[in-house]
Length: 582
Image (cartoon, rainbow, N blue to C red; front, side, top):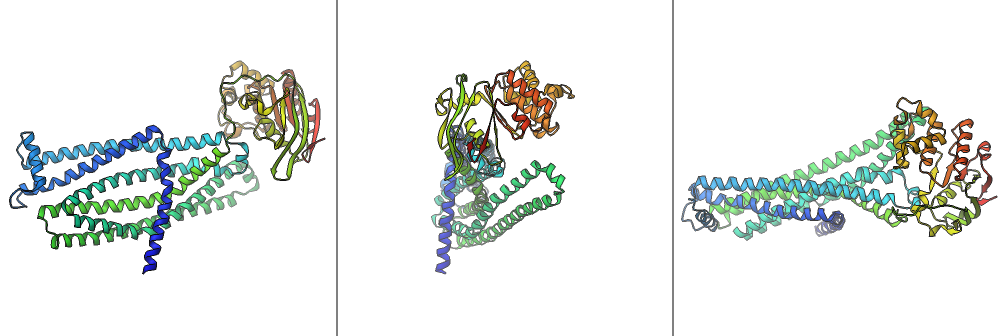
């Protein structure tokens, strides 16, 4: 027996530790949100007082209807009489009922106001949390993304934040219900301290009965967090690889995988419902038992007049359901806590690896002589160099090509050139100035990058160009399309550059996607252009046109390619092998 009590106490301590994460909820609120939360708490206090006053109206009503006999020496009755005397109104059934309606109307108005405030708090809390995670991810180092799956990054923003929103809803409801419950306890303590203590002890006992269920609910929440990430991962992979999946006839296997993870989520929801229903049954039976004991003791062992006993019964009849609802809401809150912790953890990790901030007020960079890679050394893993003492120079206005087998370090070289990662040793010199002395924003504004897999928005061709350069004029967009040998096919589309191209440009061909991607890079009017296998899906005629146009623009170009014909477009060609330039 002692062991059971001790384990229950330990479990309660553990759950209090879990609640430590709740302290982050107020911290996530903006100054406006905190003020609204304070107002909500004050309104909840007035709601409790108003409800309490409404309950105490029972006593004068009982006196006037002769249910309670004897002289009117009741303090509550005297207070109500003084109130009516102050306003020169005779206390009667009609006046009491009118006052009661007025109190309830005031209560309803307060409750409406509190609900609106709470909705604002919840919505802005959700918005601020989601935005802060997204912003932290936007400015974190590139390596951070290479070490995590897409689902790890998207699930907190798309799914977990909504669970957090549900959690704060429960938290606000718990807070409001607690305030009203404390008001009940305060009123009942003015009438009978022994009965009030009995109520508190009874509610505490019901809470202890809930501890084991709370642990199970928390475990379901932790399981939810993992399943939702897997669910998101499966959906993203399926949608992104749908063409390959169809070509392989892999639809059945993917459907089985999706169904499996969906079933796990269903089982979690069913188990959570079972636990909730079990808790509700315990509270219902326990509440009835406690109420019965309370009634028995109140009528047989407590010396109170009938009116006060009836008031205590009414208060306790309301207090038990409120206590039960607090326990149920707390149980629901526990299920959402792991999602909140995941959101905070992702944001914290992203902020810990934040790159240099983007500065909007910058001076344009002008490359006059060359871009030099001097003694570049980089390792992802210690003592496993990807680039080793790499030296290379790209004269201004020239095209330098890099070839090499897969895994030779070409992608890493591009990431360093873009400023996405920093070399362990060595540096890039821009006209002799070390890269770390140059403003990152200035450098990236002067640089355009075209990957092998074109990044295109699910929008029109025009909006894709404007995404690359929001200030681009119609003439600038047309010039970029011409330079990328894309003006010909775009002009033949039904709606020209206003044509919608679908997700990742699915409505146009692979070569057309690459040409549009090059146009997006050129519309930015860069000084340094990086092409990573950017023309491998383009026919030779259009490819030669593109490189001829780039040469006329006098751009400094770093070209990555395996294709011999493409390498002929470069002024000089380097071979990268085992992290070393040959």
